[in-house]
Image 1 (spheres, rainbow, N blue to C red):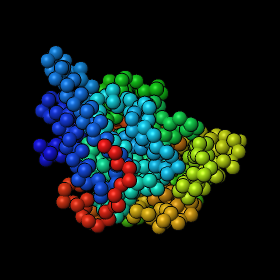
Image 2 (image 1 turned 90 degrees about the horizontal axis):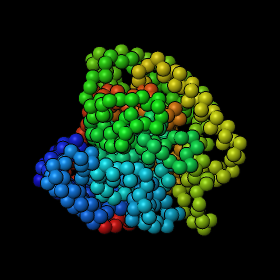
Image 3 (image 1 turned 60 degrees about the vertical axis):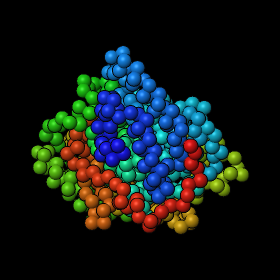
Image 4 (image 1 turned 180 degrees about the horizontal axis):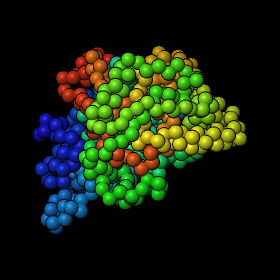
Length: 499
């Protein structure tokens, strides 16, 4: 049975659960056994809640049996019995939330956060909490409370961040799909590093995924999945209960079909602009590696073969962007309630950005936010002639564990931040603009590492982007006997693992 479950896509698993061909308890047991066998090498999970998961799965099976007797199977929730997990930045009732920080004394959350509540209502079974960087700040999922999240395709390398644990778990077959959050690339970066599909929806589409205190309105929730169709399945549930027409922002438009329907429709002949310009160009050395360029060439060739009009887009960015974005991105860490005696437990990058945020006046922050709104209008106007903008997803292949922060966190905060911006230079401006974007694996290096591209569309184009992603995707799943079974690059035992 385990082999059969492992071969199913998320949509196939959903269909088997609804049809009663597979019980929720069997599905949950399968993924818990895979986590038990593989995660000590992967570090994707901070907390595994096996007992709670099996209880929830049993309740789902009871609900299925009752619905079958009543002839109301169609009324089951859309993700009935589907296992998943949540980033350790969101509250799951009864489970500690660490925020990836040694400064937090983790206590069981009293209630579910909005995103968790939404997906529980949709029928998911939570298996636990996944690894994140401290307060979700970085493009790598390493912190001082648990082993780093590693890349399933090469465990000596990082899985990216901040949804790194979730992306690694999906890529390695520990989960069928997972929700992530993205404030500057935190879904798309780990999706690209792990070779899966990651969608950042447009601002306002999923109100439950927004972050309190996010003055620049950067953070949104979205799906991580092995294929575009599986991402669409989770997106449909995230947008529920009103479907795509239930979006909070009317500019998203109204759509009769689900995203699963949209991903399987031909999007028509589209104008796609290829852009390598980055708003970080004037501050850092932005230079796509050969493998990033290869991934882009594959995407251009496939889009051209599908009949789309692909051409170079001349996009220019204001060179004041780096300072303004950094001020907005780090403002929240300045207001965190942290006891003075625990401040030394912060990572050097968080501690430096916290100090700068506290020293920044409100007027300076307001000036940065006003600039970002002008940047948003100007960039959207430049993108307007195109149905989608195509960029590399990452400028570099996945980086080694410890590469950004240095051994024992010895790299300066500014050098760490520069490396992140050079690694993922096309991510954050999409959050500033509030536009949807998807990361898709298109190319695998000779060493078996994934590389991909990013497609950015206008507000309301999530379905079209997923349809394009289906044309482009080249997925690959780690199976038993693959890199995770190798003793090289294994992590130390986790400190935070509860049952």
